Picture 1 (cartoon, rainbow, N blue to C red):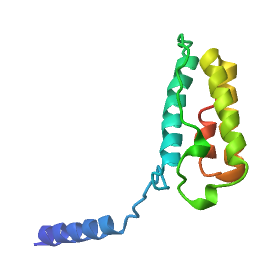
Picture 2: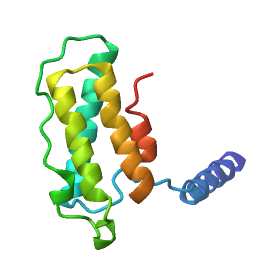
Picture 3: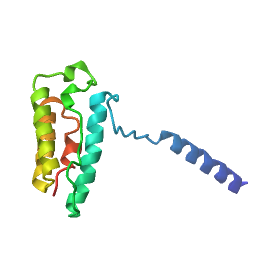
Length: 136
């Protein structure tokens, strides 16, 4: 009888504890997928792949990157339409072109610096993700 009571008590305690455990939700992409958001996610994936190749000292072909102009994309929210977006988008495109002509670590770093500069001014959320793209 005592064994049965202990068994029932154990199941009750176990059942109560499992319902009280906090559930952690990880948000990977917090914004809806506008053209600009999708472009930046694609750019991040491409740059992460190139980063690994540079770290492993793999040979890179020219013209690896082909991205639309950032400032011509539909934005997630109208508040992202700021005056500095167009010139920074053009500077980014220039850095991408330089990398495509000469895919070096230095030109790759220039691309990442462009990303960071713009995001520090307008949308700081992805700064942590961008910093992970730096070469160590």
